[in-house]
Length: 74
Image (tube, rainbow, N blue to C red; front, side, top):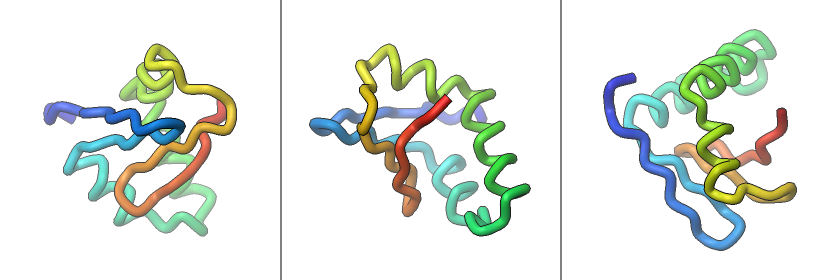
């Protein structure tokens, strides 16, 4: 994903901005376990979790990518 991935911290929320990633989330059937696992794989491959942890992500913090809101787990 060549576009810059911007992460904005707003209190305990981390908002991830990237058009391709936001589009991928929008197109993912979040009720489909296989599709959700693929999305998790892509996020891990892009080291999103590592970047969030370096920014101080704590348990209970919220991550937002497009219309997807979740808590990051290992």
